[in-house]
Image 1 (cartoon, rainbow, N blue to C red):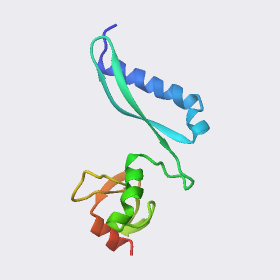
Image 2: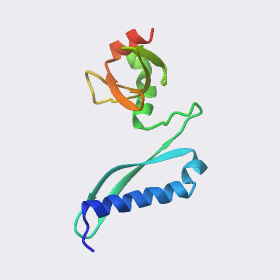
Image 3: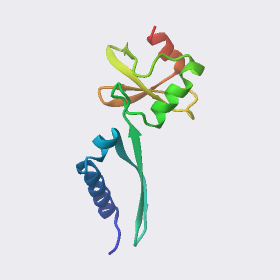
Length: 125
């Protein structure tokens, strides 16, 4: 069987569907997501990421964990803090540690936006 991009995408989607149907996520209170995948003519490899959901219902992925870890260093408000910017409501959801200019990840209507730490401090007063 020759591997193609479409076949690999379909197989990964089926694997994720099997995990979701098996009640694995509910049993362990976590979310499973697909990271990256590589393939050649005869096989493929996919990285899955499993992130716990905390008591507030927030997914504790790498960025959320980084936010909590470096929150005091950057003097940031609590994870999940909401603020208004340009008449839209944003929620802090994570921190990209390798980003220098805009490391704070915020969610607004299902989309992710990046903000500077100083902007977050000013907007969340």
